[in-house]
Length: 321
View (cartoon, rainbow, N blue to C red):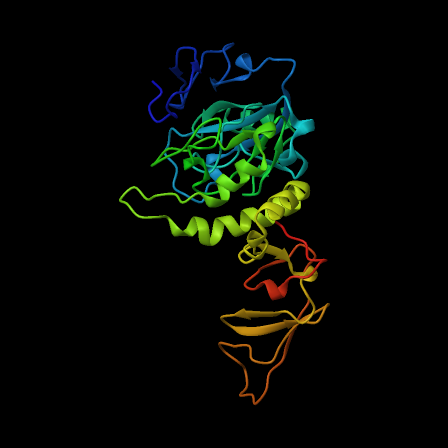
């Protein structure tokens, strides 16, 4: 029993039986299977903030006959003091390698029935109704610093390898850390240790991506989330002000600098404040031979472009990340 479940998970189970459709589920009165379930989460301090219900029958990938429906509920005791929650995000969501254990949150996973069971569809509907107030409310976190309760959350690649930082847990090869730092420890000296860090690859040599890409992004985020601290850092190390960069970030298209040029494999576009204009776009199968061509695109309010040069950014530019 339990083959294929996540490792190191406490289970609260009844004995499994089979109904006449061949689907494994619990005896009447015991309910579906729980992994770190609500019976372990009954703290008054923790509030339900997110839920999702997975229907294997709707998956894009081939499913096993005995794969069960699943509901996932997130509980938190610090949502009112969480910068991620304010952005509609949660660090507990996502795949194993892209999520983190939060000092204030927990996940309850409840397993239902297989597609062959009579109760399969009814169980999914019951879970959706039960958690409808928070169903699909949050999404996976962006890799941008913020405060979570008494901690500063620092989800930057390779940063958790820096053993000079008093993180909740350090990472390493095939091992994720917990990039949470007490806000009282988030000082100028600590920030400089983050900036000057040079992580080493397992086979030797520096991971150059950290200094080339991560540190400039870290400095941009620091200036946005902790402007006072950023000012103190620049006062101590003026050279760092020129190192920060918006390159690689996703900006809302209608907020970039007027006159900004966006190069795409199918053409070059210039932003005029309302439309993206191009006269060299590529058309695969034109219905007629043409001497000139023009394109005018008006982006949706939610549309984003990836910044490739800091010249594309102005004071009114807003970023998604």
